[in-house]
Image: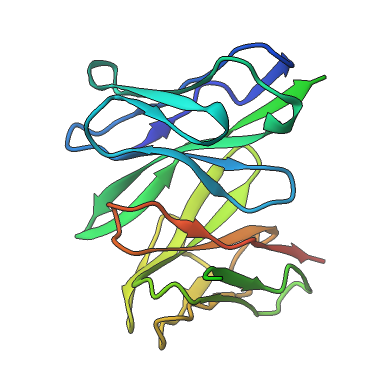
Length: 115
Length: 113
């Protein structure tokens, strides 16, 4: 079955620390990949996306992600986190089931950044 | 501004009652989705619709029902058959399913008392 795995469920960092959140997907075909973020009390919003081309994708707020096809991975990175990055992060990719498209999400990673 | 409106934001229901969650979009998107979010489980797909008058069950459709009579509206009914309905429900839409990112509403938190 098509699925997305996020390895870290809870991450705690101090401000200015570097961040890397793991994401692996199980799908061998053409892949589109997304990272969404949910800040406390807010709705889910798109952080970045990969459709094709340069495997290093840059998103909003200094985030980036690298698509490594051989590892089925799409890890999210940020060189220096801020307190305002405290949020829950979801990796996702669209899958086809019964001729219909749907977005499959990972379990999410809760990031807490301490001042 | 275009977007998705979910209402109400908070909803309380007694056991044994059906309740309907509203989702309206003015983005002219064909596809709409309902997800359920529980701590540590991410988002799980309940129902989705790619076109008016058509919808498909997602991974956890039992105890839920939907309708898609208009392009803009995709209401979700949580029936009394849903064994564990207390959760955060998110509605989303997209232009081209599988090829574009989704736009999400702000969610409805349902609590069964």
